[in-house]
Length: 475
Image (cartoon, rainbow, N blue to C red):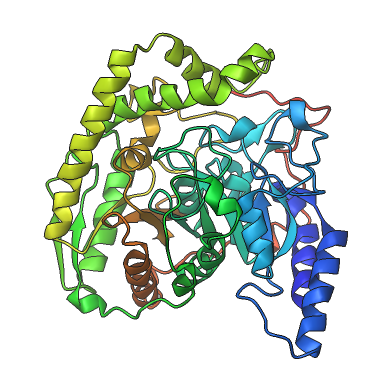
């Protein structure tokens, strides 16, 4: 109960400045915490997450707690049942504190919507925290909760983790069951854990990857001993052979990010066995992603379109992708799928030579949240909301597991993160490597996880929250 009270107190202190928690469930959380306390007093066995406050992304339905999907259309939606990821978290003893902010329908890498407004970066509330799991990342980085759930299409776990200095894990497809997906086999619509440390994220993964009745409704869910994620292996980092790539073969990355990444690689090289440039080429992945994403969106939204979901002012990211679907032929999608398979196999060969691959987390530093995406990168116009996300979206296309790991601050004083990539289904090994690197980084003033200045946030009123359910955005 003391831990929950501490979290609720921190939320009261800093959420007015950041707007990360959009719905609180304090009363039901106290009831859940009381049941855990009774189990402790009674000497009963405790589950892995017993008593730990967890924030749930507002994309994931919660029984009895408003779930809006970041949309005015669902402002008063109170689900009758939990999503499977919430069922499994509760079964492991989690105390659900409330819901975290997302872009409308969770589409976009900037957490802002017409219903609640924007979520500010805890290192500078006028800047974006990334998205779409932005509220979860900010809640973690500012100490509102120790654990939070997220999800990932083209980087929705990894981008906000990189911008906020926390950890997010995009698991191998099918590791975390997701019975609410609308496509049976896909690298998109994955769910995953977020935490301030790798071990925290892995602990949450041990719960949400568990197999239960709800997981049987996901045809991608494969047999796994989820409990083993609660115990990671200790890895001798001096034995690691790490492959590095600043741009995955040539995708759009700013000179600022390249420069910071280069200095981080030099520092990492002094800690590990060997660092080598890897000959990866995912330059075709952006086009493949755009076509496959169109296919996913047509499946996801065609019924909603028929019901009039796309009103004036609706998330332009969703509209742009759906409209792309209407002009994308079956042959275009077939070509994309074939290229996707070829890229996966080519990328997998890299792991015959290295233990993991490291690349930057995001192509640009955090930008003002009033822009849905950066307008240009090094003078080159950004064509659409996905064009600047190729570092993360390309890895979605190949599908391998990725852990987003903070590595200090950039030149502007905002968090800088990298993506650690491993071969398919190597999640336990990848997280073990990430945790061991994290421990090694903690000894370095430039590599250790950055911590936001909480004192600067207390008493500050946000400019992010909407008044009268309206917000003006640059597009």
